[in-house]
Length: 238
Length: 238
DNA sequence: TCACATGTTGACCAATTGGTCAGGAATAGT
DNA sequence: ACTATTCCTGACCAATTGGTCAACATGTGA
Image (cartoon, rainbow over all chains, first blue to last red; front, side, top):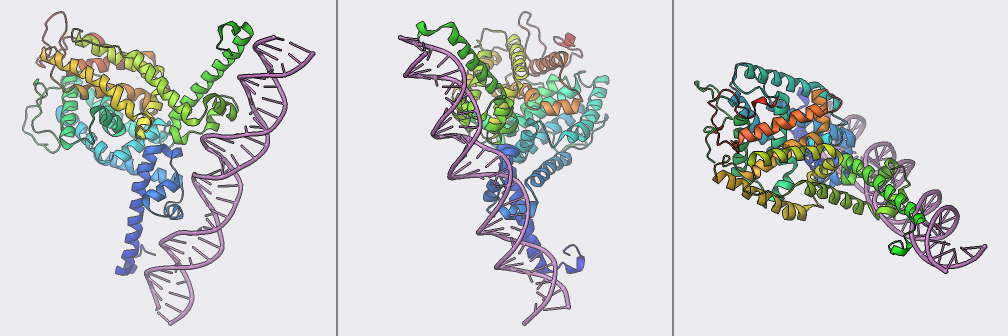
């Protein structure tokens, strides 16, 4: 067995390495194809060609079309979870919201295919994600929503419906991955530059913060990381 | 020929009527199927079954799968155009933006299948809509963007990037049709009620207007400062 | 070196795909 | 009533679908 530690010899590594390599090849190709055509519209043959492997090999690695698809969905949800740390009432609303928008934006643009894969699944009625949506994700949203409400009670922001707010952030960031073709067609750009993305991120943060009446938190900055260093969210300059 | 005026007899009407009826049946069914599975993933057989007609009949009416699909896209774009009247610099920004959000929201929820059909097309790289996106739609966006910029110059709103603003409104309204499965799963609702929709519409209008610092038309009341703890112009919405 | 396990893939399968077509059914014009 | 034209659809087609399998290749442990 390859899992046995003593058998992990250098010669075996190359074998496992190529296996891992091929798997990544297949996953990447499948993400592209599934994102573009949806589950039904994608064909194993097309995935195999995109991965430059025989179709039989793809089935050998992944078992079945459905298993491959589910695995991709799981990977995307994992990325999503890895991104979304917990928040507390003690956190600064402006920082949390800005970081949320920024990270969501980064996720969308770092994994556009995965984002579109997810979107296609939801669009089709989420046949494989029903329980995730009404389970894990619902809990996630509810816990954040509660914090938003508490912030509002403390006068740190307006008492807006927190779920609609989360949907607003979700949709407006997701848009730049899912509707990339539309964005590029309308703007006439070939791709979105780093500057564009930064510009969009600041725009969205600004609208959300100002729109929700989030008060600035004046305290020693213990959290820096993702927050934009200078966000003039009330200044009328851009 | 049925087109000849003198031959338009009552007996012929029922013929044309059933034709029109069947056509609508097919279009409605096809919109559902295409929206759910995308162009490739949808099968003519499935559409025919949904319309309770033999497959051959569907092909007979529509010519081909692609022709049917293109026709549905065109119908959706028509609805979209019918909704979006022109705007001028003289109009009131608050009214225009609110109306835009409200109408877009109504369109999304009145034609969720069409909305999802459109979304699936964009998601797949918009193979049938490239020229529409970089032609008609682009012009539409640019003309509106120019007005937004002029409003900003006149001090009626903050000088935000107008294209990002349009995308924000587009995505956040579209979301409730395209990601309906997610919205319902997370909120735990069976459907979105009329009240929910009204609530969401007000929420989005509020965030956009306040977030963009849109001034009220009549009184030159300055609402941009967040120093005011209460909400000057939208507080009473809900 | 050799036996054995694992990796690989072309050939093949039944089912489904979009589309055609012949010919019957229904209606129209006279 | 009798053609003629249009409407309709079951049978059929080549191509493609997801998936299986037997045969072959490769590498491993002794």
